[in-house]
Amino acid sequence: MLTTVSNSDALVAALATAKSGDTIQLTSGTYGALTLRDLNFAQSGVTVRSVDPAHEAILTGLTLKNSTGLTFQNLELTVDPLKADNPFQILSSTNVKLDHLNVHGSLDGNGQNDQSALLIRNSSGIAVTNSNFHDLQNAIAHVDTDHVTLSGNQFHDIRTDGVHG
Image: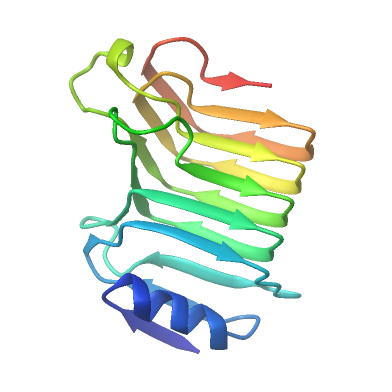
């Protein structure tokens, strides 16, 4: 089933009723910071993506915990340089894909004044592919993880490490 939503409450509601194989499309706009937990989808999983990749939906944070079988695609992930590191976290989760993401901090070409973006902890089967990480302290950190795939990504204007683990 294909569902289109335009705000974070509608996204959370759509995920609560989603079935494996469903796609949830986000209209352009800012969805804020989300905390998602205990979402488990078998087989083909559930995909969350922008309706229009040329006008990506924006997330300012995402904590995904104890979840399986999710794909996040064609989204803009914005890291506020005045807030805490790693507003995007995958914790104790499996089979999660992040694909074609634009992940960035302040957009001033200077990673010296930015925070880190993505933390993957205690997880397995995580894929980060075809994404652009820029204007950040660290792009991706992983701790106590296995079967992590990083492929086709670009890293630039990073203060310390593109990948740290």
